[in-house]
Length: 376
Image (cartoon, rainbow, N blue to C red; front, side, top):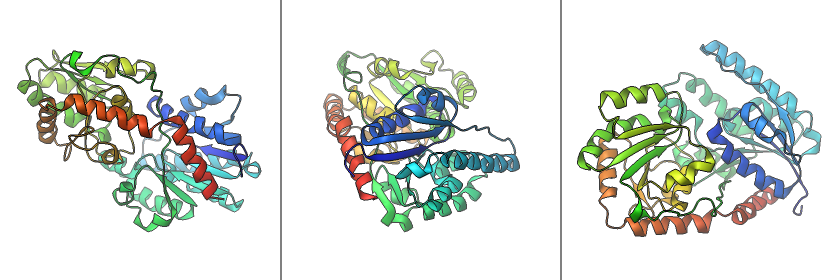
């Protein structure tokens, strides 16, 4: 096949606002490489793409159950709904891609396989590890479901070779392709405020949920702030932990030095990132966080746990800072270390150069074209 001759379907569950950017990136790439592009999704993600005349969109409905039994029944219904939508265009596609929670889409994958269509699972992270961080009992059954889903898939896309071991995918190594859908607008995500001019401010920006480690960051803040009397912090984002975080800030008596600023739109991100001297990513699990790349493009040093593809991008003391784990003690020790580093200016410069070299639209399109050629 040559460029513009692929017919591609993409299936993804409804995505929160934070996940729209990765999906938008993938769609923009596939629009370049496909003659026909079909998208099955729901919720805000369906509304986001519905008006795009270059995409055939199909809506799926999704609601969460409260009990284990209800969650299982709604999941089965949801998978059947996905499969029924796939049947509407399956004869006209070359391959079907599964994005976000892709490792659990067994019924749609089996449907595609019955029609001899190529299937690609794009693992943006580990749903199992996310459920482990939340101590969710559903993870035990989903481990079995994941096994059969990965068994049926033709290819599995990961962001890094490091994730093979981290996500427990060793037995599927022959199916694995390393690629990402990340690219940045370097006119928007750029340095507008040099690091030396920025206020004494550190921050977290992301989903307020257990797997992101934001509660551990909050617990570390009293030690960090005590060591730096002029330092302030902010927490940007929304999620189920918002109330608990507000309570923790009050209990630690640091509300006067820590702002909980709520959701930040993607358009406003560069403004906030250009205020920070350090962005903290204390996650238990990650794929390849967009916010890390966006911060580096804005000349903002990042300190993060060594999970997902983060160690491929951040080399401690050179392109950012790595902390051994996300215990409050470890976060505090390493944030203080980073703030005291004499290399911050050079690290900011190095980080910008890394993302400029590796996360352009042109390079990402080229990588995905090779993927499509290799699954024929």
